[in-house]
Image (cartoon, rainbow, N blue to C red; front, side, top):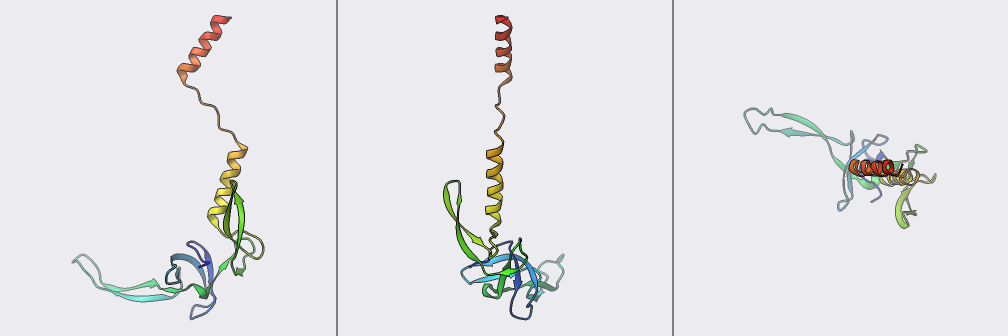
Amino acid sequence: MNVKLNDTVVVMTGKDAGKTGKVVSTSPKANRVTVQGVNLQKKHKKARKATDVSGIVEREGAIDASNVMVICDKCGKATRVKHSFVEVDGKMKKVRVCKCGAVLDKTYKKQTKAAAAKTEEAPKKRTRKRTAKAEAAAEEKKD
């Protein structure tokens, strides 16, 4: 299944064709996804306690994953997902890629930013106060 959680997708077929939304949940075994604001179904809710209120609740229903296409963040178009291998920390990682070449996996994007920050800035060396005082006292004795 090429659609993952929190992807922005467009519905291609069905009564909600053309609508876009964020993927709320996925079910890979059933090959179904739930998209925010798409395939709204009415469910009758019965009050189970004296304080509960009964009524009709609208909620999103699942649709087949083949009926949606992922929208690329970079080019803004609905695209078929292509898989490619990219090197991360010396290991090859399989990522989803758009036709324009942009990486669709958001976790991969975060990892690359974090890795770049680590290589640019080295952490400051920490010293204990006692050690710093002892070194300062040793320097005073030498002088």
